[in-house]
Structure formats: structure tokens, C-alpha cells
Length: 82
Image 1 (cartoon, one colour):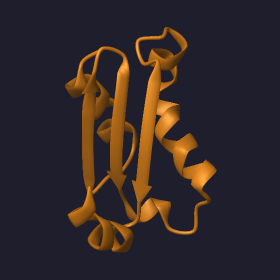
Image 2 (image 1 turned 120 degrees about the vertical axis):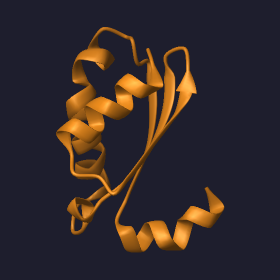
Image 3 (image 1 turned 90 degrees about the vertical axis):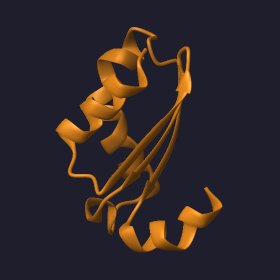
């Protein structure tokens, strides 16, 4: 699976201020920043990220996905540590 394809799918499906995708093979990490995550539970945030990638996850093109879904305020506080 290509990092750029994952990033493109996420950016097309979601309104993101920041979208960082790292990884190789079929193991990836996503950092997504958006106001849409305000008032969402951690599970809802993850579901929002999983949804556009459902086909890739089902086909095992993405085997493991680590997600950090943050609001812009959370991003400002955490980006120096990531």
C-alpha cells in the first residue's frame, strides 16, 4: 500500500487541516488534525479515519493502523512531541 494513496483517500473523504501518513508494507501511522474531531469520543475519531480506508483494511493492504486524531488545539500542544 502506498502512503500517498492513503493520504489522498483521507483528504478526499474528510476535511483535514493536517494529514500525516507514515509507514511501510502494510503497517501505517496516521496523524489527522481537524475541527471535526471536537466533541468526538476517541472511538468515533478512529471510526472516522477507518471509514475511508475500509476496503484497504478488509483486503489486508492495511494490516495495522495507528491513529492520532486531534483537534487543532490538541495538535498545537502535541506536535512538538510527535
